[in-house]
Picture 1 (tube, one colour):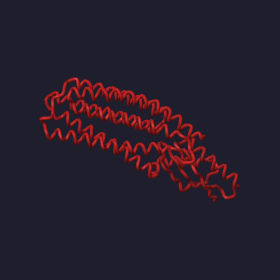
Picture 2 (cartoon, helix red, strand yellow):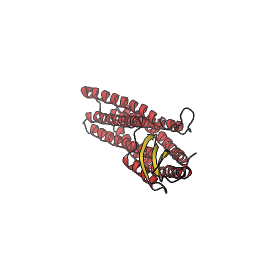
Picture 3 (tube, rainbow, N blue to C red):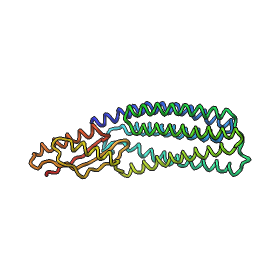
Length: 294
């Protein structure tokens, strides 16, 4: 097993532990928000509960996909199973798009019939503020773990928790105005939360589609990989570096130029050293090298 793959598995285990914490916290928040929202007649709080539910489901899906992606390469998947994350992300994105549209549609119907809008109970405001505080604390916890694990996936998950906190803030404001007599503000807050869920679904789908169609890494990441190869003793130049995202990692291939007077064994040793350096320093699962004599 390569050092890069070992590092990937280590980070995955750290990510899974923190994700389970997020799942448990969100589970109780969902129950709390939907039950209080139902009895306090707050559409916004129920919508926020569904938003939290979407976050919880995304965490569960990530856990399932992560478990599958940790499986080593086999006869059917020679490059490993990391793309299960991308496939599951696409599925989740489509589900979130549907949930967001349904929430906006239901809220819009109520806006067309103001008689259906009821004043909410003040306990809804207490619930919204409490959820805001808990979600902000969850964000800080997840971000600290993400930085320690150096995981972009965990950082993205942490920012999802922050977006959930932002939705709770919107809900708290909407409920506050409803209590002041502006009844439609609770419904407007529900629509805003629906739009947030739509955006989350779009982001999931957009990134997953690009990853599944072999999108290359950004220019900075590619340049850093190229620089690491060029710093390898014996490498004269580099060309045709190609990358593709696989889950939260990278698979790449490159042409490495070495002196034409070297033996096959010497050229091979340089390529192996370049490959090892890249896989140790970057999120690269595998680097396929081709030697060009110059």
